[in-house]
Amino acid sequence: MTGEAPDLWLYGAPASLYTAKVRAFLRARGVRHVERFPSHPRYREVIKPAVDTHRIPVVEFADGTIVQDSTAILDALERRYPDPHAQRMGPRQTLATLLLEVLGDRGLAKPAMHYRWNFLDVNEGFVVGEFGRSLRFPAPPEEVERLGQRVASRMSSYLPMLGIEPRTIPTIERVYGETLALLNAHLSQHPYLLGGAPSRGDYALMGPMFGHLGRDPYPLHLMQRTAPLVFRWIERINGGELQTPEFPDRARELPADDVVPETLTAFMRHVFRGYAEELVLTAGRFNAWAEANPDAPAGGFVSAEGADQPALGPIVVDYHGVAIEQQALGHSLWILQRALDFTAGLSGVEREAALDFARAAGADGVVAVRLARRLTRVRSRLAVE
Ligand SMILES: N[C@@H](CCC(=O)N[C@@H](CS)C(=O)NCC(=O)O)C(=O)O
Image (tube, rainbow, N blue to C red; front, side):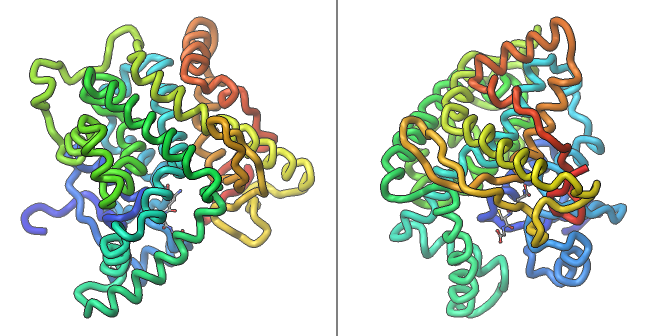
């Protein structure tokens, strides 16, 4: 980096889903930053001990504040770089961004993981190389390959936990095709998800849509061939385009009167159709845990073993008509809690408007979730308040 000092350092990797979410904010908002691999000595010596987890991304701000977890990082970034559009959002638009962040966390995990790990004939050299280089670079190719394969075998072992198996794959592929078509239809009318300006929902979806699906060789070409406007949306955000050639006269503004474009609502409804039940059943698992552990102290970890993002047990979800056996993933509830807090804080017509939007987006069951204990994070681990 030459010239002025950066505002922050992003510890992450090009092939990492959650790094893509944070990077999108930094680029779209023009934040001066430097990205570093987790192999950087400062990650090992300072960052990792401070956050007490090996996960990326982690951000270190110039004032020394260190934040782990993409959602916590975006919260910290929004406090430092307030988004003028977000401040003018109505209840529907705000709930839409909160729910898009829920979807961006795990709602697209099935296609993101499937299209990375089940097309190794096309993807393997690139993905393994990317992992290897993020751990040691420059290094001899055999060393990059050895390190990359080590990460690859851990990451690909997550597939069964997400219910990705031969029986469910045809449905996952069909649903992803429909997802791309709906998003492409939306982006043929609007440059960004909420309309004329990017918002946190766009950044959140860059995780799956860019980190895996818009970057790994197989799904990248699928996207370019079948959903070119989705590909352009990704370029637009990561390139920090101020004005965009497809919409030369479009003001960089959100729709007035708290309108959420119907094409976005249709896309969300489609994704929630395969994800809402997973969240509801995951909340059920957590509430059962809370009932079985009435003495869990405030600040206590949800996982007895101290897992940072604990699985809460097996669930069977109806994913667009196919029964999927998978794990209930507790961290998603912490992200959902933000949307629950938002709706709980509304009253009167504002509450009606938000709930009305949730119904239209297929998320009424999701915003009706009630958690038996509030969730928080302590030492980067899911914990109860
Ligand atoms: N909730 C975290 C998830 C971060 C995460 O899982 N990152 C992946 C890379 S994309 C990771 O570090 N995985 C390490 C592992 O699973 O062992 C966030 O939003 O930042």
